[in-house]
Length: 98
Image (spheres, one colour):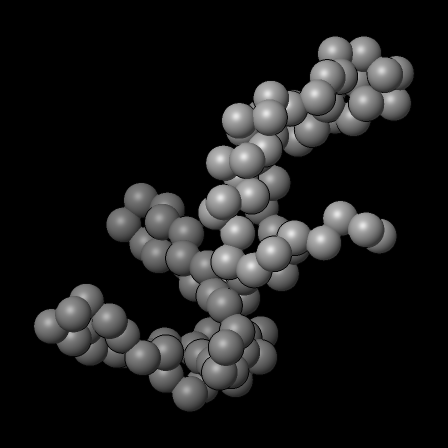
């Protein structure tokens, strides 16, 4: 890709508009996301990866939880007070018939 240099002005709110040539080169438009990576005093702007970020701690916890559920270990009913409190926060009635 040929080198492109564009200049953007920072607004009073700290915002910039990506110049059209940069948007075209990155193939981004309205609603798309871009990533900013700081390397020393340089900022690299790239099209953001569409895959959601996964926290490794949450992934490990979910794997542990899944293993417990599959094995039937460490499972118990929720306390009735907790169930009632959760149901009380619903904006519409819950239907558990399905």
